Image (cartoon, rainbow, N blue to C red):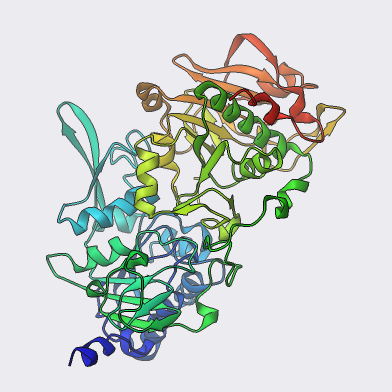
Length: 546
């Protein structure tokens, strides 16, 4: 009888998705395609197309289980072209950037759209599993997430229905935000191996995000739900190592084995043992050792220089987070300089160390030395456990507020930016000084602006505040804004220009290209000349005394 009960957990995909009823709140794992149950999602939608059920689904995804042209993006494209679609009623999504069609559905009020930070959403599932009403945090105060601003609503339909909401709560005279959303009644998760009891391991995955918490949230009272897991293979019970199990079998109702083409490690990688940490590659095999000298490298080098100064100050290796865009290249430069043992990187989805991948593969790392859960990783960020972080920027205003990605008509979402920028004790924002088509050259150790970008990024007021500089100053953060031609520091009086690139006219190329006038440091100096020269900077020599 026990053997029969266990075997009933392993179902065909069609049988499993039949268990999902109309109007369910469905939490789905997936950092892009990392641990995304692609097969289950596609089969769920296939059943809807065949039967009209389940319909009215509300999705809770963190950040989003898709890549361009795959899974949710593919489904969203079909739904967008169906004016009478009833499959989706709404979505809580922390980064819809990989699905332009989903963004259009939200912008056109076709479905409810809500957004939070990745870290807040990660903690939400854990808190709901504990029976709490939501997540209590100071992340988002004074930003577009604050209910006195946009409140996380992405469209008018969301503002009207308020299925997810953020409230200001005062505790002992201090403001916090309470993030609330419906408790999931279904969890779709993914692992590598399941045994007959439903125990789930993740040995071939690049991350395991919050799959345990999604299962717990679904199973919690009231209204206990169901958990369906997608895996690559089935093992005999009890053959799995107990310490390898990420989701215990009693929390899993059904298991579905997916075909290999729907069980990718990341968007462009089917399986690479270096991503799952099963194999640590030699440092010399990394292509970053041949990275060319350009302005992106100059900016990444300047961030690394700041981090190495911190290593010297603290007298020990430092733990950092590097965001998407130019900051991801800091790890490559650190490897190039032989400093990877001094600057220990982390990625939001859970990896420590290695080289973070880019684009839709972001979330995975080549050769991490550890992988932890996503909520635990964000505890490192929000609590200031890390020593520093570098994130990109799209706009900076005269108060030092930062908008990394939000524009009218564009909904990429905040990602992990709000939590990381709030919690890190030191923030090194990195990006080009202007945007738009430009031609910047490095000649003889100097920066030459052949054609400057027409879009100013240092503006009077950012479109949406995602990093609140006043709150950062209140917390005592050290904040620096690094570009290819100028370096600014945040102070109580606003931004102070501290460095400029060799070959640059400060008035013409910096001050005249800003919508406000920064303070000028009394110690204004040229940026380190090594930033603009080929070959190694020799930073390892700088820390030999440690």
